[in-house]
Image (cartoon, rainbow, N blue to C red):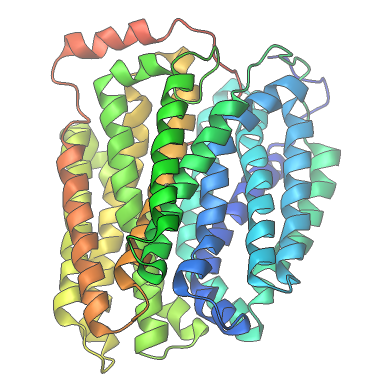
Length: 476
């Protein structure tokens, strides 16, 4: 893909194109910390209803990531990036001034649309703008933005919520405006577009409805009753739409999930593992935050500092995981990471009491889980595309990103279903046991990520013949 002839200033370009997805990723972590304060502003709603602040965002982001990546191919990545960033910024302001819970959820969904547009476009612009010699390091810096968001998100969120939870969203506005200004001036567009890039909007709609209906059944089951007709209808709708999605996906010329890619063992098992690990991670993160705020009575700021040591382990042990993967199989390293997440959660489960003793009861387990994330998550994401032909790596990375978001929705929904309406010591213990069980399942699934033979790896070359979008979608 050729570029406009204007000179490329590498430093500002990296700052702009890494900064926008950093803000989008940061938003997830700061909203987790703000969960309790947001709930106090909108009394009269259940925990299940508040979970849609997180789930609404994740569902829409997962469903639209691939179609909007292809839309960026059609109109040009710079236009898509600017449109996505502008929409994300405007929606952030709207979230801050939402007069009701459901208006907030609505604007969170709009935020997700913007994030799903800017994310693939930003990496596409970065790859196409940088000289070949600088592309690998540039992509590493881009990918590191997600780890940085995880490390700093809890503390930043706590500090913002100390002023008001509205600042969790308002902080995006000045940052977004600055990024937009410099993106228009400094980021070169790709001269070539692909007007024939396909978009499976029907598949995206079916996936959105299916995952949304399943999440609805899980989070509202404790409130409405598991035999309530509304829950039965939601379960039936989820089953029908997900089956319809799979049928449509297998027949579309530009499907969300290319069926031939699932024949590659490492890719298929990496996606299964990504769903499971993302589920246990999302549930564990929210469970610990709710425990700190609802049971121990921590403020948002204190919660942010209490949670931070775990995420801060992630960048360090991501490097360790890379070294271990070169010596051992990726599956074993990811399994070790999942097992450490289970062990850390088990430590918390067996240690905590209603009387706060953070250093003895929570901190050691939280550090262990952070080490587990650093070992498991980057390994899972990199292994997903390791055995794919080069022509399919963009599609593969898009699917693994979608799987992560689906896992996040399932994890939050399962946690809310287990906690129910009684958020107390016993229900948290039950939730942590479920989180441990999902982590163990993730460890087992991880072992399938490594091909059993060189012949099997080589067979992945047959998965690379269909036309795919050139627009890379990052593994976050």
